[in-house]
Image 1 (cartoon, rainbow, N blue to C red):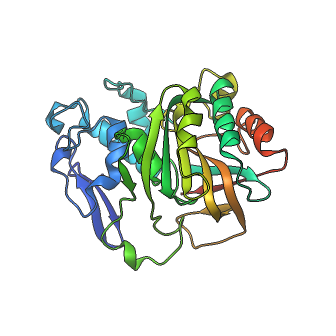
Image 2 (image 1 turned 30 degrees about the vertical axis):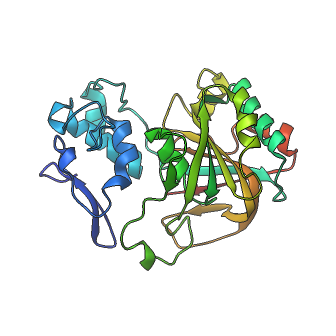
Length: 313
């Protein structure tokens, strides 16, 4: 954000999105929807009716909400003076998150196995029953990328916020110059295309949805709305309630490779681990290593020999 109260996001000297607090509906750039998820989270208006406000002039404290957008999308934080003196606007936006950058952490078996659809459904059910995640859930199938970072890059994350109807085709939102980037994801652009097959509040309906899904033939992604912060172990591991965190379960048609420890803003680097059935969590703040309640459920369904890696950026 500059002295003229404008927030701009550029990549490779091209403006992706530029907005003025209070006039977000008039934003400009080559990729206006790239910030749609963080804008919705911050309570800023979109032009397609996904916001309760018709235009930015009706939004309380638009400058602070724009800074919250920057914090969510780019791992930035508000200056301490604003944290100390600003009252949170309506809608429960918080401004006191400590410094941190986003991480996409995966847990997978040591071997890239594809568990049966029934076992995949049982894993998901136990995640809810053990109070690791909260519904609603959504199920998608198609061409998914194991390295499409959560919660904002992958199509599952966008669907979690946008809540599209069943049958919607989910596609990666790419800028016009994406084809000029030949780096593999997570360092380059992830290209995903999937169909939203089903969604629901009751995890007991998931086996039926999986039974009619192209399980094993296409990549399967199952995303939950949030972690369950009523579980004290979840709350402790992630340093408090943060409903931006996204957990997704994957069952890939073919093995893909994930880097064990990398930064998506740096040059590509290994080592890598092959994955098929795995769980990925996109979060900003959390303790090192797998979340204990999550790891306990995964050991029950995927076996005791698990591998954990993470991408920062």
